[in-house]
Amino acid sequence: MGEQKLSAAPMGDATISEAKARTFTVGEDDDGIRLDRWFKRHLPEISFNIVSRWARTGQLRLDGKRAVPGDRIEAGQQIRVPPPETAPARSPRAQRLVEPLTPDEAELVREMVIHEDRHAFVLAKPPGLATQGGTKTHHHLDRLLDGLADDAGARPKLVHRLDKDTSGALLVARTARAAGHFAKAFSGRTARKVYWALVVGVPSLEEGLIDLPLAKQPGTGGEKMHVEPESGLAAKTRWRLIDRAGNRAAWIELQPLTGRTHQLRAHMAAIGHPIIGDAKYGGAEAFLTGGISRKLHLHARRIRIDSLDGGVIDVTAELPPHFAESLATLGFEPLAGDMLPLDRPDPARSPEIKERRAAAAAKARRRERKGERRARGSQTRGRRR
Image 1 (tube, rainbow, N blue to C red):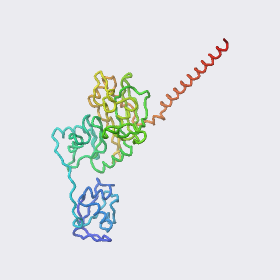
Image 2: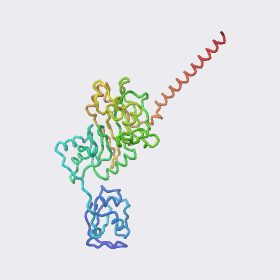
Image 3: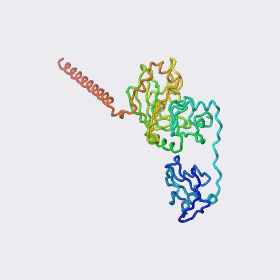
Image 4: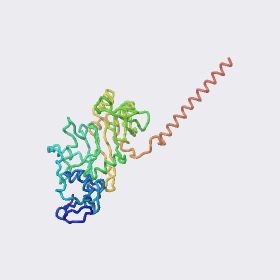
């Protein structure tokens, strides 16, 4: 937050006394945020109304110039704040109750780390662990993040989430500035997320784009989504076939182009190929016999996202045991999935897709012509008789 400086400076509409003026230096973690957000982080006892009044009367300064709450601040700038007694005390915000982690919990979250740099951790979340807590959820990843706090006690921050039963790569930001950067990348769809899924049955095409709007299904309390063309939110998923086990099951790569709740699960069920183990969306048809686990077979295999320092975070998460065992049981080669390139053209414009469509159209035309010839032949034979 910076050291308080006791130098005085003319303040235009108002003058702050030399003995009581406060000057703070904007840190790297606050670079780019709004000035009112800075107050919420570092001087939460100062209300927004007080900050606004200081701005109107010229008492709030940024590098010596008058400032307003909506100004964006930069690292290294000086924030000049009036004496504390000019602001009525505001009741402090309720602090987050922190229950210390047990040694096993602290070790668990440290073992999840598969990538670490000064801006982020990437964790390999196991299936069965909720990302965030709820009324009946005490054991969750957000709580475990206390085990990755830095020396100053600052804990990592969630910027996206995975369903409880989905395993795989999950990124958490180490600073507020990094959290803002990564959140923007996810919302702007510049981050790439690759999922692997085992599904029931085999799609008729090699790849495709699912473009089906999703909405909360009435009567489920928001716990389930369904396709709703009229009022649903836009939801798009690209998929491609990695391998197939006869007509019994398929190994699919999924890339969500939007981030709706349960999007991948709802989309695969909607096209008739529910993810194995997904009773919520596939019902009894989502389970296979023959030693295939009943757990959800959806795994966040890879995440690629631009970092703050100009580099790229590109991390792959190993499969959980039940998924790896199912691949082996179905006769799939685990390396096959990683051989597909991350970037590819729109499936609708893919040369392979165009060739298959052209071949299908040509075949249809041949059938029509063959049918026409048969009809003409029948008519000719009829006249001869």
